[in-house]
Length: 493
Length: 104
Image (cartoon, rainbow over all chains, first blue to last red; front, side, top):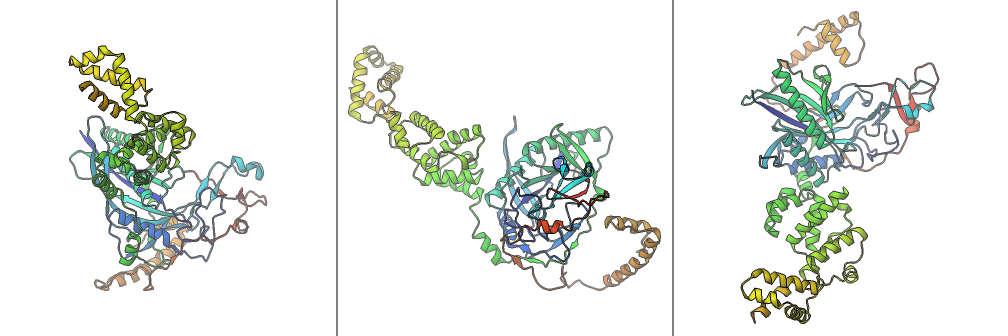
């Protein structure tokens, strides 16, 4: 039997706010344990939540970016469960009425083997505001010296600095049909939330975490199979591996006559396997109800318009503009808009006066290659857009050759320095004085009468050989276009 | 709707409340009374009424995103319970609150 995998994603994005969702305690990462755990974060009796305006703004931005319905009113609910890192005994979330409704994200699925690349629209079910839990520390060996021997063996430590951090949970329809599509969606979403400035996208620090729902069904059938949820994937590579393993496991289980139990599973990067964590039925009874401590959240048309005015140009719009305004290919435009920093770097290079096509080639070529090797983001490029633009202008002004530019680029990348000083110091200035070039060509023609004869006898190759001689005689500095032109003229005479 | 003792035990477990059989029986009577009240309310025609999520007809006020809370860890941790091993040590270490080991 042929099987089809069905995948939906729930992504927790940590919003880039200074304070928590419901209190004005700091959300800065890496502070000493519990130093950012205020009375609301620790759920002391009598405290009340007050919603963060910036978090609401982030949610509206996301809604606008995916062209979603943003209802006038949304409601906060309590999701009840007991865990030591959740001191209130409930998480404030949104249930029936989320802040962002149905929307769409278009993904680009890359080519694999003989399968061509394609685009696909993934439907977003909803996105809702909620708060993060604290962190449990299970290994207390390093702190055990503070207590009597053995006292900490059966203890876990709780750090509530993260408790209450604003999250936007983004939920898709079960629209994805392969690990590749799921990863393409996750990457697209990762890029989008950073692009609109609502999440720093730092997966190591847990700012962007994906839960993946996977089920399989016989190809051609409609009814969804029982799903298992892979929790907390924090890298795209692990996501790919986890989905592939989980899909194989479910198909094998069914083909062996087994049944899939709904469950939450964890991916073990060491073994590459997924393993059930707990069965969902018991844990799933969260007894949601509207939180009486919070009034409904209202988002008016005026609120949306105010946020719309602050929105950056979205990647799709910018891509279309690059194609029309700069005559870039769809591929180039797409690559350049794969991250906002990269797009900004390109735009700055062009607005500093260089040709767009050249700028695109260099940004995606030499610069990206270097960054790749050194595993650095574009923001860490030692060559600024202005410097790159100057370098490109020296080429278009015929002051240096493309080959010389490559050498200069290497030198500037490694040691910095001023462009014109490097050109001077390395003697890379191109000879564009036609008198000087003529003199060189005259010498070359006089020294190579055999080549001249060959050319006159109809051998085109001899022409290239003569150009080579002239370039050599100028120690590579002659402007090749001028050499060609003058040589042609002289041979025709 | 008839509640059973198993229903009560399950609800009590979800809320982490300990109830013995006698308390469960008493709770059945009380909860059945509340459910009766709900049945009465469900008989009312609410078709033309917009549901409310809050008893006040008002909307949420928002707070500017500015840090105003300072570090009060020391004061808060004075409330931490004792370790429970017979010593006088509090269930805190290196700024962490200590709880019985939790492993998924």
